[in-house]
Length: 442
Ligand code: GDP
Image 1: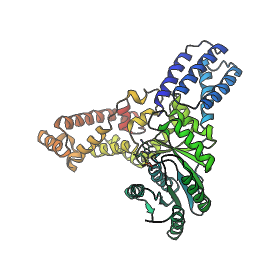
Image 2: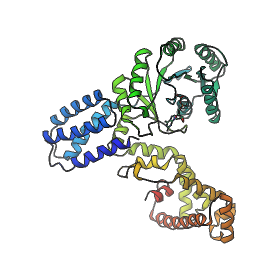
Image 3: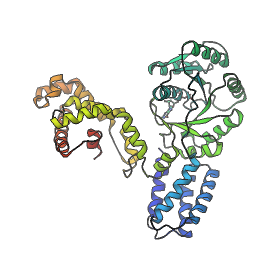
């Protein structure tokens, strides 16, 4: 996410580290470099100007504190201003705890609306324990309805659709259907066009007036740069939006524009899409994004992600096994699955302070899948007695998992080494976190 901007800023900060003191000349020089980096990353010029003016004033007015170094002081000013332009705080969805919450998703065609609708359904179900219903209101493109239907079904959500009729009428019938069938959240996937046009807007305005949604959320594609910013301005002026979800924040292309969106429209970015999969959807925390961009590491996000996905009960069981030295290949497989649940390893690594940026790391998620396939091809007995997996068994396992004997050997060797390592660690005291990840990350 925003890797090139982050790399540029890291370089600037390296230079700043050489400063002996914080004086007017080096503050102005440093901020000029930052200004260029922001403009290059496609951050809107108005935002850059506001940022630089504010940060210059603040840095020049800073008391030189003995307790912190010039670089810490300068970084803090830059960080504070980044957080400010990103919207200061995180902002929750306006969800109703009594009746049905209605969310209207608007945006241009291809902005990621349909995918985001299903991501939102998944999010409210998982985090608010609410039963969502998706409404297919893009009647102009049958393919769009079909896409929503397929994606919803695949992820276990219901949709409401009608073959004919005006979008607003479909939404009203959908609301009635939701009431009768105890749905608690209504997510409307509205029609998108290639550009904002009057007919589209009038239809959306009518829908907004009749449905009285709790939120009108613009889905903006972060990868489209400044276009996304003017689209957001257009939708906000004509329709009035309550928040923004940025899709495709995982693509680095011109992501800087995203940083301008909140400042320019006065509407908060509430969530971001970080991949094509349905769980790739995160709340937008200005402070975390700022520290990610400044390469300060996103420790809080990382800790949360790990906590969310590591089953504590399972971890306790694992610890017991390690102490008794009964950790077998089945447990190993469980560990692999836990890692997989956390999402692509590169995303996880990106959050760890001090590690090289994504662009420089090659982590093979495919290797996890391969490990899983190999262990799945073993018999129950083999998984708990790895020492008896001889040559002919290895051949059979390789064949069954679509791998080679070389790969089976490698996995068994790694497993053996890991067991040794864990034995040592297990003796040393309490084990924390995911043992496999510790091995992979070190
Ligand atoms: P719509 O036309 O606005 O409904 O857009 P879609 O939901 O069909 O999305 C267009 C494409 O963008 C699809 O291929 C999605 O898989 C992809 N997409 C949506 N959100 C994200 C995201 O956050 N990250 C990535 N990498 N792709 C996304």
